[in-house]
Image 1 (cartoon, rainbow over the protein chains, first blue to last red):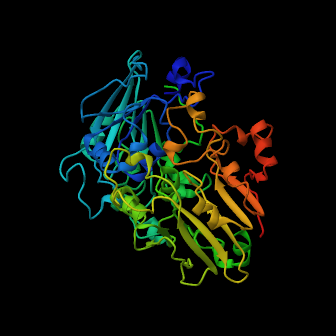
Image 2 (cartoon, rainbow over the protein chains, first blue to last red):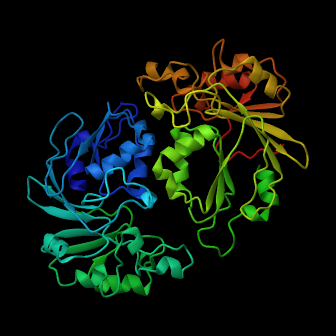
Image 3 (tube, each protein chain N blue to C red):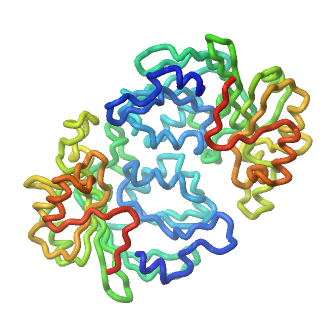
Length: 250
Length: 250
C-alpha cells in the first residue's frame, strides 16, 4: 500500500487542514480488542469508512462506546465473504484497490466468551483474510492477521502468491502458560502456532510463495527476538519477521 | 500520590514478574471515552480494581468489550457520592489514602447522546470530583477533570484547599467551532471554559486555594501554548498549567 500512498496526494494530511488524517478507511478482519479498540483513538471529524463483516459490525453496534465515531462522518460498510469491493476515498474517488475478503478458521472475540454474540452464533465472518490487489497492475498480496488452523482450503487460496502476511501470534500453542503469563493457549485465542506439525511454518512449507512474512506477533513469542534460535528457524524456513517501519514494494 | 508511590515498594513493578504493573486501581470520574478507553490497554493479568459510580459501571457492563478485563482479576467496585473509601492494594493492603467522591455538574457520555443511558437517566454519578487525603498526614488535594459549571456548592467544597486540579478543557466555550475543528461547544461536552464571567478562573478567583492547576486541556485551548496571551492570563490569575512529568509534593 505504501506505493499507493506515495502516489496519491489525497492520502497525506491536507496542508493547513486542522485534525485531518490521511486514513481513508479501516478494514476490520475480526472483532478482537486489538483489532477494534484503535477505532476509539481515531479522529471523529475526518471522514473515513469502517469496512467489516456484519458479525463484527454487530459487535460495534452493541457496544455504544463506538458511537464516538459518529455515523455522519464515519460510515460503516458491511463486507461479504467472497465479494470483492473497492474502498473509496472520503471524497468518493476510487482507491484503485480491490479487496477480497475470505473466511479463515477463527473464533468470536475473547470478550464475548460466555455471552451471546451480537451478530449471532453461527456462520463465518468473525475472522477474515484479505486478498488486496492493485487494479492497475494486478499485483496482489494476502493479509491474514488471525488464523486458528491452516486448512487445505486456505492453502489453495493463497498458493502462488507474491506476498503473504500471516498470523504469527505464538511460536508454541502453550507458550503463555509455560512462561507464567496467563492461562490462554494460542488456539483458545484463535491463533495457530508458528512451529510444530500443524503450525504455520510446516503447513505452508509446500506452497509456492515468493515472500512470506509473520505479523501480529505476541511478546511471548521468542521469534520476536532477532538472535533467538526460533527466529533463525523461521528465517531458515523462508519466513521474514519485518522490523517496524519496513516498506515493501511488490 | 508520587510521595506515596516512592514510599511503597508494592507500587513498583515487581522485579522478575512478567507483565506485572504497579497500577493497583483506577478511579473513573466519568464515562467519557477519554476516561474509560484506557482500560482496554490495561494488563488483564495483573490484578487491580476499577472504582466507579454505578452509573459509569453500568456503561462498562453494557459494553461487552470491557470484558477484556476479566472480573476474576479486575474487580469493579461501586463508589458512592459523599461516601469516602480507602483504595486497597491488590494483596489487600491499605493504600493509606482516603478518597471522597462528590457530585460535579456534568452530563452523560457523549457517545450515549440519543441512546438510553445504561445506568438510568436520572440522578448524579456521571461526573464526580474527588478529594484525596493522605490518612497519615491529613494532607489532601482535589481532582476535578470534568465540570460543566462552577456552582456555589462546588466552591464551598474546595475552598481552603492546598491543591486543586481543575478541568481546563477549553479557554472559550465556542473555540472549537471558531477554529473549524467541529461543532461541539465546551458546555455540550460538559466542560466549563477557563475564561469569561462564568469561567473557572473568574468563578474560583475569590477562594483561598494554595495551588490551582488546570488539567485535561484540549488541543484547541490556546493556554496550552507556553507563549500565548491566554497562558499568561491564566498564570497571572494564579493558575498553573503543569508540564508533562511534573511532580508535586504537598
